[in-house]
Image 1: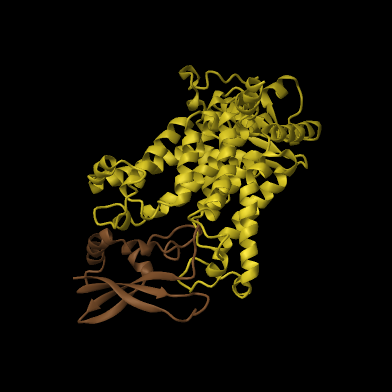
Image 2 (image 1 turned 135 degrees about the vertical axis):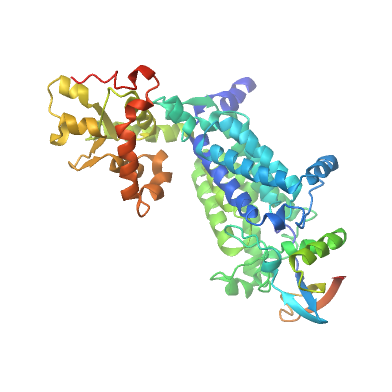
Length: 430
Length: 98
């Protein structure tokens, strides 16, 4: 019986797609927290910096060793962090890059905890540790998944224990935070912390939000708001793990973090990481079901046609990768050689010569996009390309992009893995 | 976070001394790191310099950072009660950097 429950809670295989998306949230939070400190290396990490050390976390010998770092080594670690963090963000060698990111994070934390060392930072490091112990977070929404070119990568199933541990982490973070507020060191039951915070002078941690003066004038309201917050935090594990209250608890948690960032100068980790972590409570089976439903609807309706050159290995590989990225199955890939071979007319009245010259996207309404502009349109449609929208639509990219595309298209046979194809040897016009 | 908040509030103000005249130094010039979504100065990170063993280290930092000043005064601005006497505050020198 216990074994059965244990298996269901931790070892049962479920889709890893949520974990993959959460990886991006972790990476962005990490970047938002650490990278700003690199803009002032002299103040934060070089020998001229003002430093504080977290001796309750690191052994003194580790702190002493790290303090011996010359400025050149610090600079090396800055570049090292930026590279491995970026790899982790885009999901390239995901597990390795996650491990190396955590190494770099601990290095900077040991070097100087003054700017980056906060309670939420400690929580983030635990989260990153959970993320780096398996390769699951790289299963989808990653370059690794594109490199593997498995069309159904989004369906990949993995033992659920990592996601379960992350769920427990967020639920019990609320619980213990509340416990700390009402136990020996906290004063939320015996005093009125929110009332004091609302009355802090301008140099204090409270932002000048709309209702601040109202709260500052109503101590009873502040007290009972505090009690309500503590009660919610204490009940969060129950609310989050009980199926009927789960969705409301997720909304409540996200609302709490939005209010927190609007009212107090608290580390933005609370805002960037915790709402995403709350979303891990949504059953990935339900997410997969919703994706499959949308894919079915798309395949039954009219899909856009992606017309490509199937004799070009590079193009075929690119199309396979686009298929991985096409989460909602909005594209129908058509090799124009096959259509020509079967004496079928090419879509939108395109000729073989045109189809051979570049990639074409024919939308359901008949609009035709060619070459570089295919990727511009796809960036609006494929979730894994959303991050490239600012690049594809950056002013001037409409001029430079087609030039780059034309060069790649013209030399695409040189990108063959098989060198015999370099002289278009594999291209047999039909 | 905010586990124990009481009615008293204090923060650090640093003055640079030039020709025996004190000049208040903007805390955002002392620590210029700009964080995303919040302000570390308002989170009172400057309060860390009150820790006794940080005195030497902070003085050294100030001298490197602001070489134009002769000396520095690190002071604490204290509000005895933010609710009962919100406009009353006192200031005392915690240490001097010579």
